[in-house]
Length: 270
Length: 319
Picture 1 (cartoon, one colour):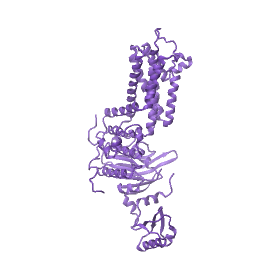
Picture 2: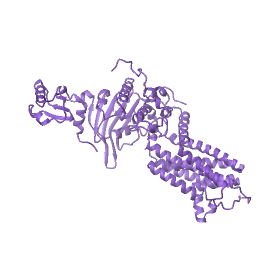
Picture 3: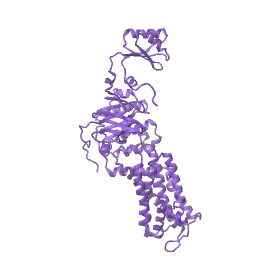
Picture 4: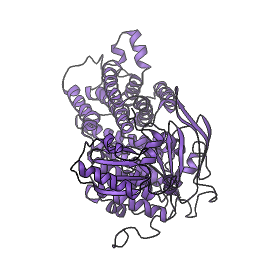
């Protein structure tokens, strides 16, 4: 066509296909998902700023009926010790559920899932990468919120620390599955609306701000069976009373398994 | 962990594509209706058709995004649905409208896709040749349509595939970018990569393709090399010229021997269909002279691919 040398030397595109290494793919995918969350202003507001404001506000002001601030052994509980586990539950719900659902809704709109499922990236890794990213974000949230709570005088029961970690991990996976269920099936705008409404309803009536103990009995039973109520009550048991919370963990695992099974059938690529 | 650099392409005697009786329905609409197609390796095949003809459905059936309702698909010898995991490392895909995280940087996205390949092309080089270096950190949603298309093309070839599927690769590109992409497609073909592309640009198909398939209403209506498709009739079967828009083509037809058809194909572009000899040329120019207009860019030749396409698929606008 022209006298200039060809832009592409012969052999440049000679086929040499093959799948990349699994750890490298997983690392790169999870890293991208994490960075995109941490870079997104609205996500930071939802996952960090609102929980921080609530943590500080509820600790320093008397705005909520906290029931009797008494631990299982009858000793009294400091306000920050009561508030912090519930705020950690909120943080998990905000990032793993609401943030995840909204991001997935818009990712689908922009064709990312289709793009990535056309590569050698195994399908299971599309989910695993997002879960790893969610766990990294939750770790960051726990470090920041826990740090601020410590400055406010938070003294968690160390004997429940391992249980709390287990609850946070299973809670993240459970809320992540619910987020994928919502964000994977509906249009982005509808996901945005529903995810925010669900967040608000669960925050107020789902056992996070109001403990089941402060609710009418019939409602308390239901709330304890919600993932939000189970995570908040489980973290309270672990971090305030230092006890195990197997029932709560079971509730979270059941929700996660149910949502995951359903999501694997309903999630659409675009 | 990465697989050995040996070619993981299964049996290299298998054709790039083998479709037999391929059918796909969406509700009551039959999008693809019994397509048979054989594409040898190393070819560039252009799939043409009006909007809604079934081009994207056909490609998505080949990519494994859709399951056929009837018929069989083999891509490089693999069933794209059942053996998707084995097939995907071998192919490159450029979906229509691209695909990337809205907030991801251009370079970051290409690096992510490159990480899925054993021996990817150099990402910085690829960004550079596709003119994307300057917008490496620009979020995807803020790229222009043409830049998004170029990134999507880069993602489709970065894994050094055996076969690439490109759904309207030059849609929304400016003429410079389009020429660059044509050069790249020619280089892919020269290096032995099989290419299946859809396009609305007849020039694109005519210049690049070894083989052209025209589909309409989910069925193949023509198939062959660009020359074979336009060689159906003898030379000198039409004459084109440009003049002022709005000449009365019926009057011109009346000035010619019986059987000649005159059309204004676009404002100011005229086409006379029929056997063109010196008398006909002289009659046309004489008639133009009577109207006080100069017939410019006068050309005698045969049908081009666009004529063939419009004859086969009709001139009415599709919904």
